[in-house]
Image (cartoon, rainbow, N blue to C red; front, top):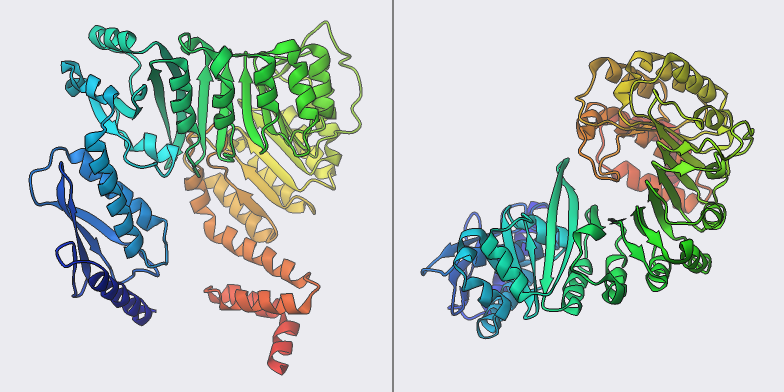
Length: 587
């Protein structure tokens, strides 16, 4: 592999020497070869160093640094250049990336030259004020960012101004200004839109308030739509609350912005708060081509939500996930029809007052979650028996002290569920835990068990729970939620014993679940990682035995055999597939 890497590195160096003028790009060959590329614009002169380490390109990426040769005007431009080049290199793992990086650097230079002559008038206005250099960092977009998360995360704390065109800009940082700043912004811009951007990075939750200011509502909508349309492969939340946006006109300029906000972003949750959706906006909300993840909290839908429901009924694909929080925006009749008939993949009800206690059990959605919902005293028959739960996955979260009218009926009817989730927001009583254990013992169909909201609440009954799971013939996956609690030694010991006794058992400690709260899940998972790896291998070997096509089974067996594993993995694979091994040897 090292010989192959060396040949590929030398081939790239030969290409650079043949394709570029020596004054523009040149190479040094040694233990760590390096490509030197001259960056020269009216405002910036740099030498870009691109190092080809021994592991490149198979195992490592290019190392890219920059040296200043003449006095530059701003270090931020150098950082922008380095980020562009490093992102380009990171997008080519295992591949030759020199040409792509040099091309990206040339594009950056061209954009920088064009920007000198056509700099944003907005940024020029900001730069003229004395407060700008003290409190604001000025940026100009040279090229489309790789993702919205990367764009926002790279800006350090404080107030930042990012010019998109001559009619608008957006700010990140504090939403409080000095009187001079506030006066200037209000004098220059007549429209403003505010939203919060939330993401996780290394189990740490980050929030950034973003303000988009513009000379008109249309400019604000266009700039915000541009932001929302940027690609992203990292889970994030966009939160938009009406009372923070008193200056922006939702009535006339919201539809296009909604379409961009709800465009195909499987890693995005969109949270609306206190927004009044017209019939047009309700239709846009319900008719997105791709599945979406929407939270409606204290919102209103025109016609009691009838337009939203009618448009949703016409969909040929699942809507995605819908969360209704605090006060749902539907009339009681539409709400009932929505739960019973809407093509939802997931329905979440949070802090709602329900008139029909058992309506969520009859939902059409495959997955239903209820958190701290109550039943209005004057409505519904709380004595009604529940024999069948229509969804295949049901998660119930509640405060054990307040209890829940749904808890025991859910356990009694859980025999039809594939996934059961119980989240106690506090320490459960012994009676509540015993009811759960009894339901698990009697369930012959349950495949996935989810426990939360922090498994430490089960600490006093953990050994009993592990004993029940050890006997189960169907439960093959545990989803164990933790918060900020460090791993508990006694609980981990019991869990490890379960994984050794049940080789078909898998355990997941969810990280990055909505609403993106920080957890210590990675620490818990690290403690049992080796056992989980073997159990997942074991399950894969069992699945291999069930493959009917002999040619496909031979191919899968060969791939598994050549996969680098320790002896116990390989020995189990061979022992379980002797017929395939003998067949291959005979051929």
